[in-house]
Every structure is written in C-alpha cells, then in structure tokens.
Image (cartoon, rainbow over all chains, first blue to last red; front, top):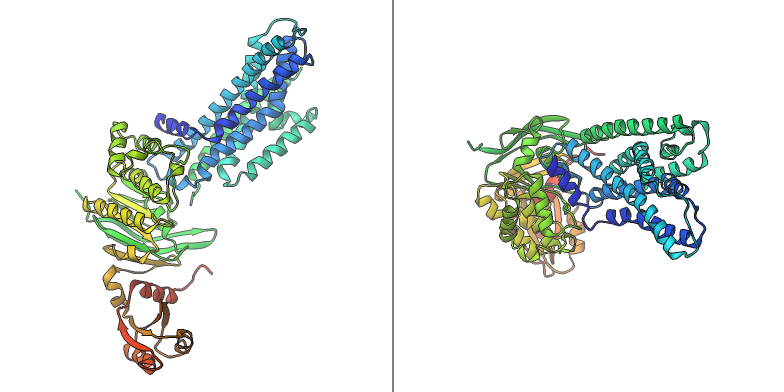
Length: 241
Length: 308
C-alpha cells in the first residue's frame, strides 16, 4: 500500500494539480494583505479569522475540491491510463484508496495553507497600512479548530466530487455538480433543510447554534467516510474496458 | 515447470451494453512464440487481450495464462505478464526515469534504482532519462512503454497495437526488441494492423466481429483458405475492375499500385475470368502469390457482422 501511495503522489509532480492547489492560499494571502492594508478589513483578529474561514467554507473549499479531484482523476482519464494502471499487480481497491488518500491529503494541505495565508496576510497588511490596527490577539487554536472541523464537515462533498471525477472521463459532470452545489449552498444558506445539504456542511461549522455545527461535522464526516468507502468498492468492481 | 502453452483460453465471451464484443474465443499460444493477433478496428482484439491479462472478467469461458486461471488468479497473472496498451499510457509529466521508477515500485521490485538503470541501458533510454515522457517522439514513447512493460521480466508480453502511428524505422527497432525478448523465452502476443509485422509472427490469429476466423502459421494462411490470386497489369484499370466485379469466380478484387489482384477459390474460374485481358490493349496477366492482406480481406468479407 505504501508503494501505491508513493506512486500516486509521484504522479502529481509537475502536474496542474499542484498549480490549482497553490491558487487558494496565494489568492487569500494577496487579497487579504491588500484588504487589511487598505483599512477595509475587520479590525479584530477574531472577526478576521472567522471571516476568512467563512470565505473558505462557502467558496474556496468547494471550488478547490472541484478542481483538485477533477485534475487528479484527469491524470488517468486524460492519457487513458486506467487499463494500464489497473493491469498492474496491485489490488484495485488499493489503487482507488491511494487516490482518495492523496486527494484528501492535498485538500488538508490546502486547508492548512489557506489558514496560514489568512493569518500572514493580515500581518503583512498591518505592516503595509501604517494606520491600521487589529484588536485582540491572533487565536491559532480558533483557526485550527475552524479549518479542521470544516475539513471534516467537507468530507461528504469531497467524496461526492471525487467519485464523480473518477467515474466520468469528461470533467463536465463533476464540475457541473460542484458549481450547482456551491450555488445552491449560497442560495439556501439559511434554509431549514440546508442543514442536510452537503455543500452547506462546512459553512454550518460557523453556525451560532452549537448543535447545528456539531450535526454538520457528524453528517459530513461520517457521510464522507461512507461515500468514500462505497465509491472505492464500486469503482474497484466495475469494468474499466 | 514451464507450461507448454503460455495462453490457453476457451470460449471467451464478453458483452458491453448488450453488444457481444467477443464471442466464444479460443486460443492456444505455445510458450516462447510470437503470436500475431489481427483484425479490423472494433473486432474485439483489445477486449480479448484485457481478459487474458486479468483486466476484464469474461462473461463466459475461461482458461489459463502462464498456467494461471485468468478469472481466479488474475492478480498473479498481472504480476507475471507485461501489458502494453494501445495508446501511450505512461505519465507525460514524469521523466523517463520517474516513469520506470514508478512502474518498478508498483511491481514491488527490489533494488529499484538498479532495475531502472539496467532498463535504461538495455533500451538505450539512458541519454533521455531526464526527459519528460510527454516530450518523447512516438517511437521513443513506445520504446519506453516496452521497457516499462518488461521491467519485471514477465513470461508473457501482451502488446496491443504497440506500433500504431510509429514511423517505419522505429517500428523496425521495436520488432528487433520483440524478437530479442522472444529469443530469451518470453511469449509475445501482439495485435497489429501492419501486414509486414504480421509476417514476422510465428502464428497468426485473425479475429472479426468478436469471432476467430483463422489461427495458423503466417505462411500457411492463404493455402488454408484455398485462395488463388491473379495479377492483371495495364493502363486504365477501372473499367477492368468494374467488369470483373460481375464475373463468376472473382471473389475479391484489390488494387496494388498499377495492377489489380483478383482472387477466388476456384482456380479455373479465376483463370477464365482473367484470360480475356491477357495481351489485350497493353494488359498482362500473371499468377500471383496470395498475400496475407488478400487472405484477410477475403476472410473479413465472409465474416458475419453480429454487432449489427
């Protein structure tokens, strides 16, 4: 399994996947620094951290998931390497599990990088804007908790996007579902049933009612693991003719 | 113990979406031979190869590859078979060395670096080791793919149209390497569309519409079909072509440069059909050796299209 994981990670070298993975933290850093320097940002470290996490949960997380899972799948779909990869003496479930773990690992790295970018952008913005101040202190634990739980709550969306990206040769299907899901999440943010909508689960981590956040984490996390497991099983058994 | 047959499959069948792509396919390939696998596009060659290497599960039939059951022991087969797909299936963003290292790792080979160095030398890839695979020419890509497919020293190589779109010089190099591997005892099953490649095989199996039409040594195929061929040379061949199409005994007409090859199983009827043109208006008629191409076109014309 270690060899398969290393092999899957090796495929990312020089690929567009890494470029897409770098985009969210770079954008958050650049825009964050400019906004803080201009004096238009929240003048409180706590609000700044929560606002950054909200932008991540609403837009950047689902968009990153769409891009990363589609591009990781296209590493096989593009050059049509499925028949080659699956003809190697490795159990199919290991191939798909390794792909899932690499996708999740990359999303975890991007999450952490965005959290770091949000913090460092403010530090740089404060240096650039001479009259800007930020009240309170940066709470690293708060950021860790928010981004960590958002990752867990986002597992279901990751699993859905990953499954579609692996299954369909064209990336039209996963991209359409991803864009649709993100749009519906924005439109249905405060809807009662929105609690059960996968694309809203990471956002609900920020809910003022603690129970709503806990439910989102539980449903997103457990649902994500179940969907990943079923998808790996299904993809391993289907004909890749 | 080495099995006398590297491949021994019976009644292989596979359907996709209600269409039977392979239908009751039998094949016995002796160890250490180069076996050609011919057939038009969509005839079921790729599907058959994929069933033999354990990639696809047959709907019916079964058999053994390298003595292992193709259904129950597919994983063991994968470890002992080298499979080269129709299109270049390695990773264009990785270098030649990285691609080979990647393959060595998935085959869990010991001393990966040594194995890769050896393959780079053996296939003259060492000067290109740091080049991205995606930037290689078609011939070099196929050479890399063959190096990758034989990295783990398989007993059986399944090559699916390995030289499609490759220039003649690269094709010749590629076949030199295949013959070298066969000399070392590796059994090679290779699908191809090129007749000059087919004649280099010890045996040829021809498949159309999912069914095997013939399986024999390359040199024996025209005789087995009993097909005779006459060559008609001369100016303005189209009217002759049109006229001969209607003549009994002429089962097939093919243009070969400035000549027509007419073929049929009844030698007398064929000769009678060609006789009127002998010496007329600058035409000449001579007996010709029936080639593989004529034999295969004739076989195809008689095959029943069960895909319709």
